[in-house]
Length: 57
Image 1 (cartoon, helix red, strand yellow):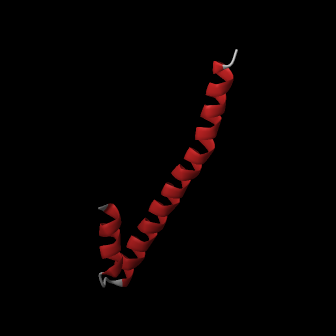
Image 2 (spheres, one colour):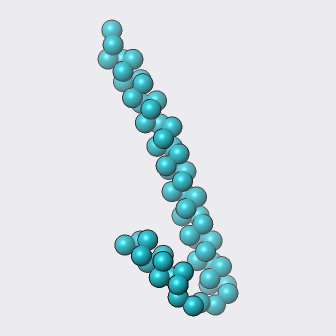
Image 3 (cartoon, helix red, strand yellow):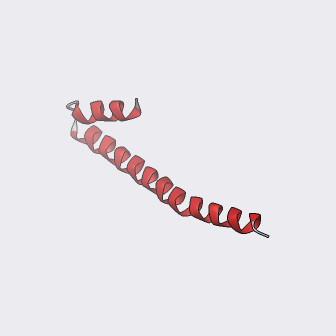
């Protein structure tokens, strides 16, 4: 839903300032998404390793 909305805003012809603002917002959304993804990739293995170490006597 959100991706479709972003796609529509990118396709729609807009004024320069509006287009720049929307592209900047999309860039920040991508940056936040990649940051969350990296956090997930880093945190999940650590949690699993800690759980395995704690479960073993």
